[in-house]
Image (cartoon, rainbow, N blue to C red; front, side):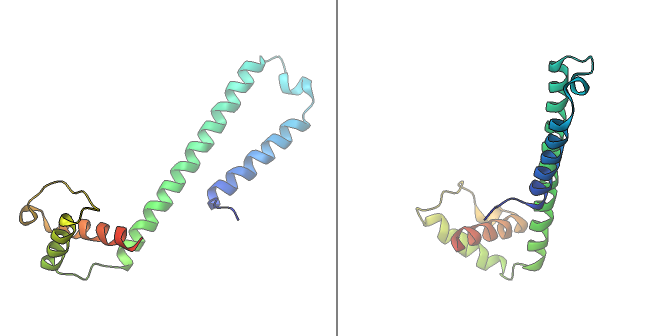
Length: 123
Protein backbone atom coordinates (compact mmCIF):
# COMPACT_ATOMS: atom_id res chain seq x y z
CA UNK A 1 0.00 0.00 0.00
CA UNK A 2 1.33 3.40 -0.94
CA UNK A 3 1.33 6.39 1.36
CA UNK A 4 1.59 8.84 -1.52
CA UNK A 5 -0.73 11.82 -1.64
CA UNK A 6 -2.88 12.62 -4.64
CA UNK A 7 -0.37 15.28 -5.72
CA UNK A 8 2.57 12.89 -5.50
CA UNK A 9 0.69 10.35 -7.60
CA UNK A 10 -0.15 13.02 -10.18
CA UNK A 11 3.49 14.15 -10.25
CA UNK A 12 4.60 10.54 -10.77
CA UNK A 13 2.20 10.20 -13.72
CA UNK A 14 3.44 13.46 -15.20
CA UNK A 15 7.07 12.42 -14.90
CA UNK A 16 6.37 8.96 -16.32
CA UNK A 17 4.59 10.47 -19.33
CA UNK A 18 7.38 13.01 -19.83
CA UNK A 19 10.11 10.36 -19.71
CA UNK A 20 8.16 8.04 -22.03
CA UNK A 21 7.73 10.84 -24.57
CA UNK A 22 11.39 11.77 -24.21
CA UNK A 23 12.53 8.19 -24.81
CA UNK A 24 10.48 7.95 -28.02
CA UNK A 25 12.06 11.06 -29.57
CA UNK A 26 14.75 10.44 -32.17
CA UNK A 27 18.23 11.44 -31.04
CA UNK A 28 18.58 14.24 -33.59
CA UNK A 29 15.37 15.89 -32.28
CA UNK A 30 16.50 15.58 -28.70
CA UNK A 31 19.81 17.29 -29.28
CA UNK A 32 18.64 19.64 -32.13
CA UNK A 33 21.84 21.72 -32.12
CA UNK A 34 21.74 22.11 -28.37
CA UNK A 35 24.31 20.99 -25.85
CA UNK A 36 23.24 18.00 -23.74
CA UNK A 37 24.22 19.92 -20.60
CA UNK A 38 21.75 22.69 -21.48
CA UNK A 39 18.98 20.18 -22.08
CA UNK A 40 19.71 18.47 -18.79
CA UNK A 41 19.80 21.80 -16.92
CA UNK A 42 16.40 22.74 -18.34
CA UNK A 43 14.97 19.33 -17.46
CA UNK A 44 16.40 19.54 -13.94
CA UNK A 45 14.89 23.01 -13.53
CA UNK A 46 11.48 21.76 -14.69
CA UNK A 47 11.66 18.84 -12.31
CA UNK A 48 12.70 21.10 -9.44
CA UNK A 49 9.78 23.46 -10.15
CA UNK A 50 7.34 20.55 -10.35
CA UNK A 51 8.64 19.11 -7.09
CA UNK A 52 8.44 22.51 -5.39
CA UNK A 53 4.88 23.02 -6.64
CA UNK A 54 3.87 19.56 -5.42
CA UNK A 55 5.34 20.36 -2.01
CA UNK A 56 3.56 23.70 -1.91
CA UNK A 57 0.24 22.03 -2.74
CA UNK A 58 0.77 19.39 -0.05
CA UNK A 59 1.51 22.13 2.48
CA UNK A 60 -1.62 24.08 1.52
CA UNK A 61 -3.70 20.90 1.78
CA UNK A 62 -2.18 20.03 5.17
CA UNK A 63 -2.84 23.52 6.52
CA UNK A 64 -6.44 23.41 5.29
CA UNK A 65 -6.88 19.98 6.84
CA UNK A 66 -5.41 21.15 10.15
CA UNK A 67 -7.66 24.22 10.19
CA UNK A 68 -10.69 22.05 9.45
CA UNK A 69 -9.74 19.66 12.22
CA UNK A 70 -9.37 22.53 14.71
CA UNK A 71 -12.72 23.95 13.67
CA UNK A 72 -14.40 20.54 14.02
CA UNK A 73 -13.23 19.91 17.55
CA UNK A 74 -13.33 23.11 19.59
CA UNK A 75 -11.74 22.92 22.99
CA UNK A 76 -14.42 22.44 25.58
CA UNK A 77 -12.35 22.98 28.67
CA UNK A 78 -12.17 26.01 30.91
CA UNK A 79 -8.99 28.03 31.28
CA UNK A 80 -8.70 26.93 34.90
CA UNK A 81 -8.96 23.25 33.96
CA UNK A 82 -6.38 23.72 31.19
CA UNK A 83 -3.99 25.49 33.57
CA UNK A 84 -4.39 22.72 36.16
CA UNK A 85 -3.75 20.06 33.53
CA UNK A 86 -0.63 21.85 32.25
CA UNK A 87 0.63 22.29 35.80
CA UNK A 88 0.29 18.51 36.35
CA UNK A 89 2.12 17.82 33.08
CA UNK A 90 4.96 20.18 34.02
CA UNK A 91 5.58 18.00 37.09
CA UNK A 92 5.72 14.87 34.88
CA UNK A 93 9.25 13.95 33.85
CA UNK A 94 8.07 12.67 30.44
CA UNK A 95 7.60 16.21 29.16
CA UNK A 96 9.89 19.19 29.14
CA UNK A 97 8.32 22.64 29.10
CA UNK A 98 9.98 26.00 29.34
CA UNK A 99 9.65 27.45 32.80
CA UNK A 100 6.79 29.93 32.65
CA UNK A 101 4.23 31.32 34.97
CA UNK A 102 0.91 29.83 33.87
CA UNK A 103 -0.93 32.82 35.29
CA UNK A 104 0.97 35.15 32.96
CA UNK A 105 0.33 33.16 29.77
CA UNK A 106 -2.40 34.46 27.46
CA UNK A 107 -5.57 32.35 27.38
CA UNK A 108 -5.09 31.48 23.70
CA UNK A 109 -1.63 30.09 24.43
CA UNK A 110 -2.91 28.10 27.41
CA UNK A 111 -5.60 26.49 25.25
CA UNK A 112 -3.17 25.85 22.38
CA UNK A 113 -0.65 24.23 24.74
CA UNK A 114 -3.42 22.21 26.39
CA UNK A 115 -4.57 20.93 22.98
CA UNK A 116 -1.02 20.00 21.94
CA UNK A 117 -0.38 18.14 25.21
CA UNK A 118 -3.67 16.24 24.88
CA UNK A 119 -2.75 15.22 21.33
CA UNK A 120 0.64 13.98 22.51
CA UNK A 121 -1.00 12.04 25.29
CA UNK A 122 -3.50 10.44 22.88
CA UNK A 123 -0.68 9.11 20.68
